[in-house]
Image (cartoon, rainbow, N blue to C red):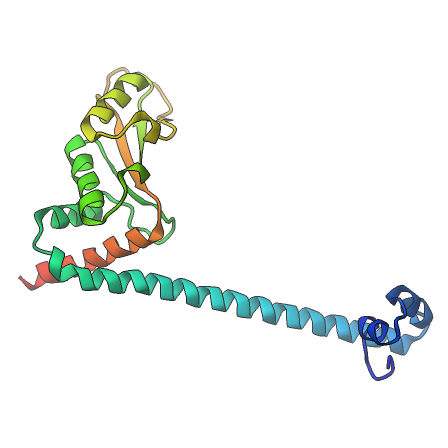
Length: 211
């Protein structure tokens, strides 16, 4: 069996001889070592092939999943496009949101509480996002009081303190308060929502350019 190119695992299973014993028997034969080298190369090649197939399968699933959200957005667009809140939310995200391919969060950053409030309404009323899943973060200059700033944004957004994540402090000291209440970041997890909004942006842009 060894001369026919069978592995120690195969022979061990057939004859109930341990692989260690087989290795000890055949290690002095060069032809057996050549078989071992060939089998190792074939195993490595097969492993790479399985990994490639696994990656390709995952990529297809990911592509199909994204396409599903895009298709859903396209179907919803005719019913939503004349809603002022829908159009405002899409335009806000186009101008102030994170539309990059990397990252699964739907994220919008601004200093104007009205923009943040409108986008929260867009997310909850148009997109059906549970308000409890919305997170807020602040970017503050060192001379701003974090508690005061959070109190301001809590009042403006209606979101509780528990939905704020860690505040970022801009390094370096600034003698004047350039932004009275800092920069607010609204973050919603889930790639699906981001895919839908990006699709809506393209649809709105196409409609506007045809006007």
